Length: 175
Image (cartoon, rainbow, N blue to C red; front, side, top):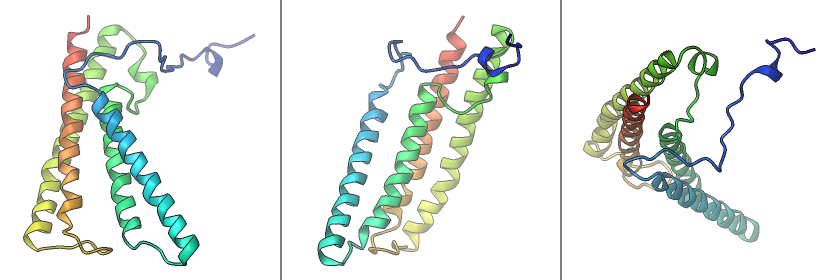
């Protein structure tokens, strides 16, 4: 006999690929293709570095720096996709239980808070980009201008904030 509080009776939200995705104003394929491109670049530069190191006992100096940058871009792009698809981390006990009006209110509140957070991150990181540009900071590994890397934090943070606003609007239109 199973008791109601046992895990076998808890609802599990599993993404069903046969279900159509919600329509968004900006296609979700953008994040999907960016993810593919970044992952391919990461695999390519890592594999080439392994080959070069194996055959020459040397290593490309730029690969670690560029790999870290690509992993940060990948995390932000994946964050944007998860927000747009409403797959971000949340406490499902609170978010998916109770009356539909409460669920809708919590979904909208969460989306609004994400939009606010990533807008704040974008605004504050613009100062870092400005400082890197103004003082001519260069990257430690290969010496390129540091703002080439830091400019993507405010850009991708705004993308996440806009995806969160889109989620807020879509949740408001739900019955």
